[in-house]
Amino acid sequence: MGSATREALGVARNALTKVAAKDALAAGTQLFEAARVIGGSAQLRSALADPSAAASVKAGVIAQVFGAIGAPARTLLSEIVASRWSSPDDLLAGIEEVGIRAVASSFDKGAAAKGDSLEGELFSFGAAVSSDPELELAVGSKLGSSAAKSALVTTLLSKKASAQTLAIVDHLVQQPRGRRIGELIRTAAAIVADQAGLAVATVISAAPLSAAQLERLRAGLAKSHGRDLRINAVIDPSIIGGVRVQIGDDVIDGSVATRINDLRLQLAG
Image 1 (cartoon, one colour):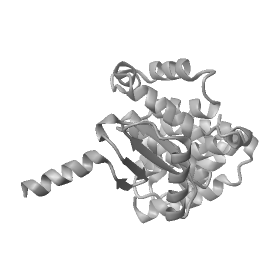
Image 2 (spheres, rainbow, N blue to C red):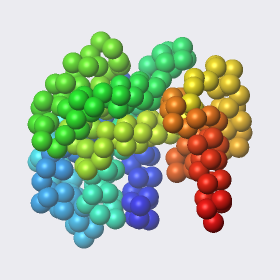
Image 3 (cartoon, one colour):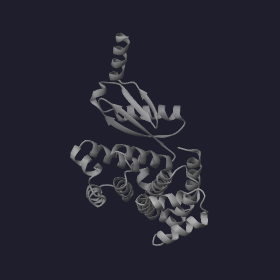
């Protein structure tokens, strides 16, 4: 990520704080719609990401192309494109991230207080898709139409997940931008957690860990990283024993499988 994009994301996140909670879900969903329109037009994407174009000119383009969307989303979109981005693709990713953050900020705080979490719903969907090759192909194939993928996601998640999860997943499968479904879900969940001031730790173990073990692990990781964490527990018998933890780009690998592999390499050397 270039320095221009990092600065632009900071400006966009600040602009999001001005959106009222009651408008956040609609604004995020409309940003997703705008991202798909922009992503489908190289000319429009280049024009909005052009660093030499005046902010007022870009705002005019937004008003002309996206005049039908709500004022909060249109204002956000105008502020996003007014910044300088490192590339047109970064601009598209930025619109998507702000959309995810907007949707996440609308999640019911009461549900979060009861232990339900938006990132948890996202991971559950990702796990369900990854465990079913046919379903993974249906939502991830480049050959499938966006409309068909959207309809499938709606069928899978309607009445089973929050409107926020449905909005995020629906957008991701329609505009994957070359990413596999697992990467799409992990990235979205990390953004959702960050919006709530948290990080996500994916804990992989050969057998299920108890609630007490997960809590001790969470507390230890939170202390070492200086930030509270959400735990995403994944079962993978291939690691044999121990645990592998991933937080962002950081990996703590204490699995038995890795230790055995390291020992083999030492013996071979």
